[in-house]
Image (cartoon, rainbow, N blue to C red):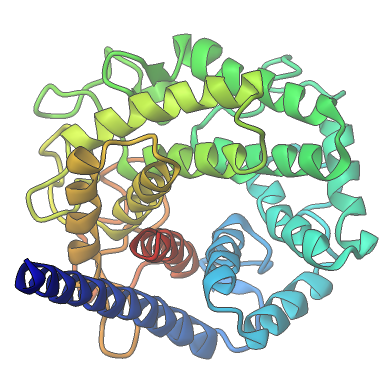
Length: 376
């Protein structure tokens, strides 16, 4: 009996050591990708210059800082904060294009501003974002006349909805939560006849891709990164809400449907195709895969997803993602900006996308959440 107990102890110790080693590898991989980015873009105030000059608080860079803040939570290095504050101070803690913008892409940067407000209590980091939301909540979208019809593409749900939920959690003002939910429902149920297909648990990117639109093989077009944006939004929204709230339960229901839909279309190699259920441009892709890993690991940590079903999905995704990292930290297989599978093609391990920042941000979100799962 004593021998059996001793052997059991040895096995458990070995399993613990293996998990610790893997967690260390995950963190080191995230650090490598981030170090590459911070070295390549040493001055975060410099604008981007792809075909035209854009300020560095555009959505692509904003997503990077979401990932950096997630990395900071598990690897609290002061240089991450210094890099963030240099960027945010330069932009005066204000959404791109000012406080009157209604474009979700402009608002995305403010998610990081509000994270820093929570960390510091400095109202300068909070005020412009709240002014922006107050303006939007009384301003219909001039393109469709709807007060709630701003998120006409599903990427926008990630770019702006978590900002509303952050504002709600910080201030306790339910107007922010309730307005965000009305905007979400408009995208889900009204835009294009409804962008969320409950049957498949997946979203069409915008009204242009709702059936009868089809991929060349006759399948629906569910764009991987677009659905990944929604997954990220749901996680980030629920992190700001109490599980007892009606809004949380509503978002959780959609999250669970999405997890099942996403699980069913994972490739054998652990990636997801850029077109989730289609063979159009089939192959590895980093950003959608990383965002799905983010959501799956969060769901596992909350106890919402069955480990025997979803843990292998997460493990395969991690094994896939670690193959995209070059020795210097550059990330391969990143689809460039766009809105559908054909954009930014052909993908490859060596191809540099038009923007690197959002790919790194998504990668950091996925790996840090997997790291948390391994230490759960």
